[in-house]
Image 1 (tube, rainbow, N blue to C red):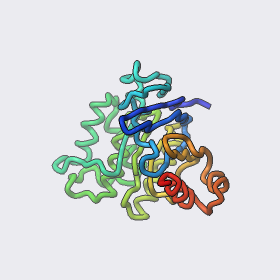
Image 2: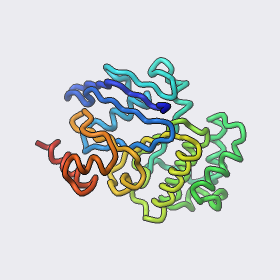
Image 3: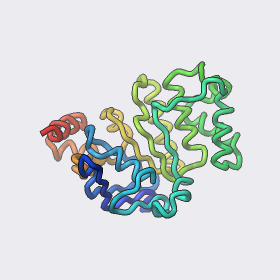
Length: 243
């Protein structure tokens, strides 16, 4: 098993206290992992440390064989990031927007990469559309295509299906599963939609109070906490965090 992301003993202190307290997190090649937790659990800080945006006070992070922060630039070349809330330029056509990022990423055959990405998510017909002509779901899909143009070893998605209708959510899932299975891309997602997580993630890491409370499949974690599903676990842990 080749680990694309390996974080060990992550610690981060702020004035209000310790946000992350000894978190270990791994994502293997082709694996789909969800990082979950109630507000204040430490998942955003953990994610930012794994991306090299925030420097940990203790612990180590390695992305695609490159250790942070020393080799942050090389690590970043192997990472793609997208979020459902990120805007797209309104006056650029989709192919222009993606082409611009293809050049920034140094993609050799940008046109082919764009066509492949759009086709994977079933939106090839949107290549000539302006940003003003796109729905929120279509923008989310294009944002994911943008994040995968350079064939990253690790794709990080923050709330990828937030506020999407079931049809678009299904298209996102199908495209991501294809990407991970066919290309070996490792996927790390954060989400508050437990049903989507159950459908997409092969493994779930729950944070609570800056520590890993559970790490396993959705079924195993639900069984461990004697709950029917991940939503029940989430509500249980959210209640614990308020005590």
